Length: 415
Ligand code: ADP
Ligand code: ASP
Ligand code: MG
Image (cartoon, rainbow, N blue to C red; front, side, top):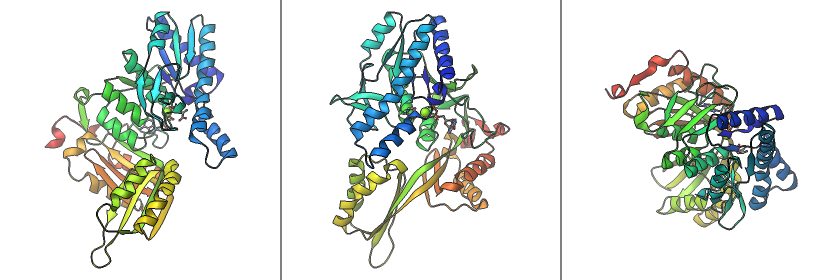
């Protein structure tokens, strides 16, 4: 069971989470619970760091950020003890979560769950601080924003859990962010394939890595509300989804930054140098566009997007390359947004992209960049136009609570 920040934000909610955990124990299950930092604690900690340093040391940043989830776990253990059950809280390191050494976005390499399994065997409820681990060089690491989801999935895999329940502040995974689209529909089932595309294009209800991990280790995710008992969304293998909607969801992100390199020499190896440097700096490059003007001069223009939080690192990584390759100029737009539509049914259905572009055009929204995968179409647009774009696309593809007729049985989309 994993509880997100809003679900443990104050004493009342924390006690409610404790009661929910105890209820599962009393129903005969053994429970490992992963907790996030309370409310906006992680944001507050980041702000504290920025108050003392413009470029906080990543190792010390992780020491700081990992404290938020420890507070939640210790408090929850106290609440559970008061309910007459035995509970023990563990840091990520104590729980055996071993990561690589990339501070602030570490990847889990191994879970040595023996301490958890022995505590379970002693009839204890185990509370694990989410979002953190210990690196192969024995430093505290954190797993990137939203990383408690990944902690939960990794522990579920390590202890062979029946299910990994992600308790959050919405009732499941919806056809769009319900905070932007009030008539968004809750999806009872979503495939790993679609959930991966949704998470990678901004549906932060599940962290991307948690979905990758669940798919690779066969973990069943049930994403549900921490405020009521209703069923949420099951993330399942492709073969388990009964029907294939043409479009499943509209996703968005308002945390993108665009970088354009102008006057890039048109020669073999230029792109390899640019993106090699970005990879070495651990920058997550998303869309890439290169255009090569015809005729004399032959200088290319290369644009790409990164998460806004990676922009500073990207600029620093590019400085030596710009000098070396003789790139004429660098232009950045730190306030970009992105809107995407995701659906396994679009694989074999022409005309979807045209409908997306026509819908955005009707709203007077200009598209900066476009990228596609077999089941996703993404457009980079101005940040402030994102909510309008999301609502327009959700309506155009009839994804709302009244739009169920847009779904088709498997196979029909191909006809
Ligand atoms: P937690 O603190 O529980 O981890 P998050 O804030 O990380 O919660 O994720 C839940 C939020 O994700 C919701 O409050 C919602 O605004 C947002 N969200 C974005 N897209 C979707 C979507 N398609 N379905 C559900 N929630 C979404
Ligand atoms: N507390 C961390 C964050 O806010 C991790 C998480 O909540 O999953 O990103
Ligand atoms: Mg989250």
